[in-house]
Image 1 (cartoon, rainbow, N blue to C red):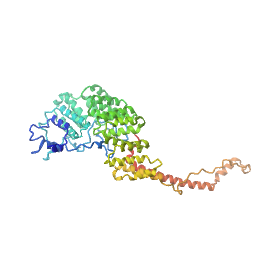
Image 2: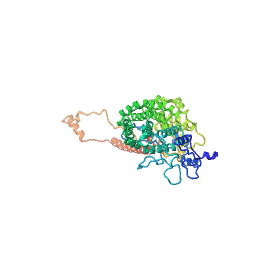
Image 3: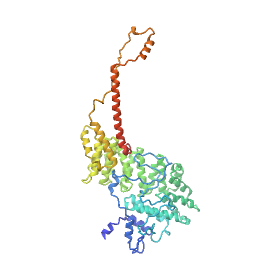
Image 4: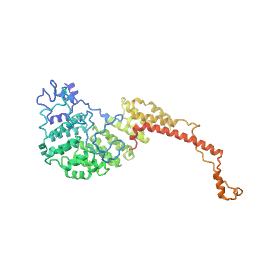
Length: 533
């Protein structure tokens, strides 16, 4: 029996959400959504097949972290961020949906996935149907699952996608009298601000015949979801003030803070603070903390950024979005290490397990090496090495590479070159392979002996400062005629000809060095975004 349950990666959040909207059928022998002869557990197993990722992968610099989906915000002014951690006008906090659940030309929006039935049907209805379930009850289940995800229950991510599809269908098929209940109106708005289909809110607003939806709220949200956030800043602030103490208050505040952040408004931090404090432990708090950290780093608010970083590490270090947080933390440390200091960094890392600490130090070492911060790169590499285990082959190789890169400008370049050559290229990612190749070229150029036939020095022209003109050499026309004669009959000494020739050789040498630097820059194109902030 124990081995059977091990094969079913279903969390408490998944089971609670399924129970909320009637997934558990009264007839246990038939199971919910199961085919003939299939147990309920088997049906759930077929559905929840995505295993929980290893915790260390969150901070693994060798793995790319997929950014969360964002609505189209092409018309909104956004602050630049070289590491692709942008605070944009954003509604969705959902992980990337790789299942392609929403067809581009689907007339009914997001469709709930099947429970794994083999009969070829597009989906299996839940026990009891959804007709009797109010949208606000489904939204409560979605909120519970989303909050479980950001607190580390990765097995609930598939249920999150499923619930979004179920709610979308329920809202589209609901009769108008369903929205006579204000809780269902709030549910539709929260759905739109929680990663739901923007077209569903558009459809509900058009169908609203009885004024159940506040036109001001739907107007600003529709503009926001359609990428026109820059045009609604003032109106959105007024709407937030009206609905601040309601069920949708934290969501509207988060949306308003996103718009303000895109406009580079410092007041966005206060809005994010209010949103997270009114929705503790939720997806809203996680998103607000992450965006607050980004803004504080960009505006050089070091103390405030450190507070955000420590709170996030304590509360949401297991979130699937913690990879973005790790990048922001590395930016903060590399840009402001003189203010951060080792003690404060240790306080933040104290909330992380050993693999995460190691990966953070490796990221710091990498970014510091690229940015030319030699001492910080060496320090971070040594810190990472103290956290290795005998099986950590890849992290060990990365630490040696980053440490070697930072030691190139020192006296022992030959030893550094040997260390870098010892790092197996097959163990590195494509970006780190480019770094290794660039480091090798630089180290080889440093220790290469100069060629006396090509390396020359520029010579100053031979100018006799004390030359005097004898009065007997001045023609009858005076100084003007003498100057004209000198201009029309220039003379070049043999020494000048030799200097010109050497200058040409020197220019050729400089051009060759320039080509070498261009080759290095080309190899580093894939990692250029890591340089600087």
